[in-house]
Image (cartoon, rainbow, N blue to C red; front, side, top):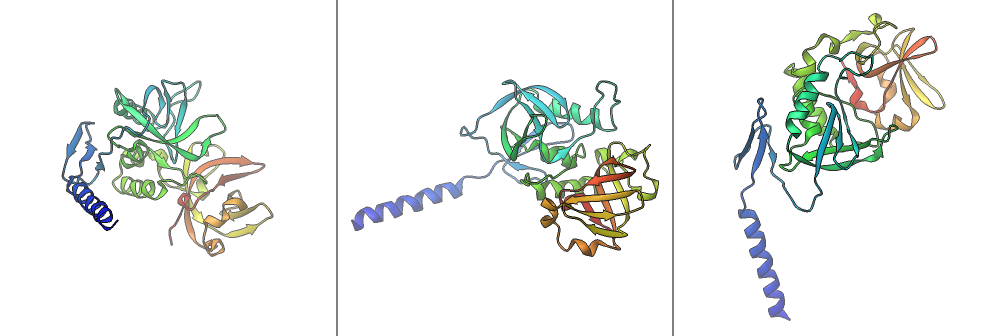
Length: 276
């Protein structure tokens, strides 16, 4: 019995020693789209994690910067991010939309991807919500944000990788990469928001002049015609929400008309920035 136990412990020690001797291999893609492998860490590298335990799929079609279709017919919406729209039907392309699509086509050409589905597996359009990774381990959602092709849009319960996406977004914004250099993505004072310029993803800045609690929602009122709505199901994500009154904030998202007012739905703290 003791001999058998000793052999088991010896085998475990030898196995762990063997594992720690394996040098990690790092993978990254440069600005020209060229792939690099090295045993030395790089600031933007992922650890190479190719594994046969995952199922990999070929991408048949890239619709835009955040939506693809696999060869098996599944339409995948990259979760946690949003890229500008490309031209479709009667709508013109938004600034940065074509660049995001072009980069995604280039990155996925000849590649296979694996999926990590979101907590909420499908959206209202029956698209599958997922993070996608190449066989080399490149996290495509994160890479789109890091390069400034996409903004972050975290919608509970889909919270996986939220912190990583926000860090990447802050760096891209600081360096004015991609969409962060376009006028349509610049900050808009709440006083200048109106029915004619409310379209598309917006960054609205102003003071929270009043906070209103109702049975179903909390409203952050920023002007006579514009307010933010946080449904009660999402309020627990926000710490001390009443302390936002009197604060200057930046709200990020889509503006909709609600009766005679303009309204932005806020579902996660990542959509708000406190500026003072």
